[in-house]
Image (cartoon, each protein chain N blue to C red):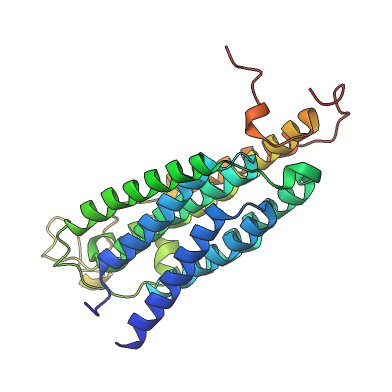
Length: 104
Length: 197
């Protein structure tokens, strides 16, 4: 099938989602986990824009929500990096396995 | 094979390969570099989908802003042994198995969606997006409008306000302000507390 349809873009978004999920699960570096979150959000943004392109009913909604996702991801990255830097100041490490002070 | 097909496969291979490289890369600095290419490939995909404004925003905010932030975080925290975080081969096997299983589930469910009626819609520009954010969306009425005085204006100039994104837009604005204050408060300079624990 040479015609590029909605399914191709959704499969690409699924690739990014799975990569992000596996990245969040395997990395022990806190910033690596943050990169996984960024990949997951990018996969969702591809889905939004693809549905906006291929469905006239959602032509504006998909793009507007993609913009919201991008802006909120930037805000999330800023707060997460502030927390990581604070954690690094206190523990001299960004290994998430050392964050065990709240363990019951 | 037209140009769109070739461009899509090039961008998809670039984005997917770089996303996989982010996962398998052990060096956190190299993972950040692969993430840069994955995000740029995503922006190219947006351009291919006729979403110029979203693609430009992706390049500006993600590649220009968020990734610089991540690279600064990497450089500020990557010292000595913490630059590499080794995980065992058994963990890799489990992660690869679970990832492939998850992708198989997603792909099977995606291929079962009936998207036969999906075809590319008209191209929208940033003016439409701005009007949608302001809640002033000009739509030509489909049917005869009753109860609205139309004698002083042509019929095509009657506005029908649809779903407005003014409130989410304002919430995002206030959210960004709160995030700026919170990030500056969290990351402020202070003395290290009593060494590593």
